[in-house]
Amino acid sequence: MRFASLGSGSQGNCLVVDAGDTKLLLDCGFSTRATVEKLGRLALSPDAIDGVLVTHEHSDHIAGVFKFASRFEIPVYLTHGTHSAAPRGKSALPECRLIDTHFSFAIGSLEIHPYPVPHDAREPVQYAFSNGVHRLGVLTDSGSITPHIIDVLRVCDALVLECNHDQDLLAASAYPLMLKRRISGNFGHLDNTQAASLLRQIETRQLQHIVAAHLSEQNNRPELAVNALASALNCTEDWIGVACQESGFGWRELL
Image 1 (cartoon, rainbow, N blue to C red):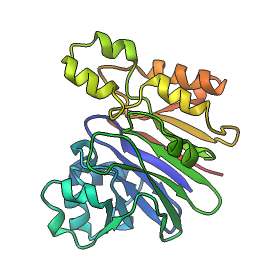
Image 2 (image 1 turned 180 degrees about the vertical axis):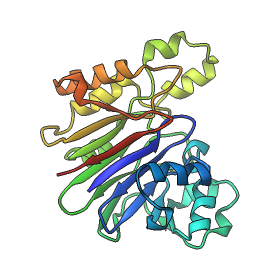
Image 3 (image 1 turned 30 degrees about the vertical axis):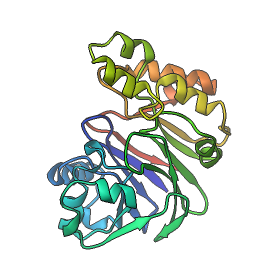
């Protein structure tokens, strides 16, 4: 089992999860052309993708989903709330499957574990992935940490974790006060300190990979996110990965 990112941030998000005979995209916030090009960097063809999972309807996560899925006849999985709030284009999908945020389901050799998160969207969800041996947890676009989030992510072999902003940088930014409150609120985005707090509440001894994701280009710095996570894990900073907006990150294997 391995995973990689095509890009992570406010300009677009897409994660690839590969279990050999099953390959999935988590979100697709890029154009079809950009997505195909980015997949090519990972030596993947769009025809190899077995499904696209959607977290919520915000454009940096869903903008490219429907056109990409329609062009390559790929099924899309999303909650009822996300489907109802999604922009135009979903009617052209060859296959659209509505999911329940509390029930796991299988796609090929991957077991998918959706779970609800507090975010300012209609019915937002995040996911954990298992191939029966390893478990990958993903958490972005959540304004706070709930007991259920901790339960879902308590034992993972890899974790892609939102470190959207630094509290001081956001407070000092030129953003309007209303936007600052939205980002830092309970239905906004996790900051570095909150991400580190999550790590202190779960089992981390089995972690093979951790990647800081969805960093704000204006209100965070990679070194700040890395320092926060390394401090929580009591590890060296070079062990912490960072997903960038332009190229995400390359393949990471779970062994």
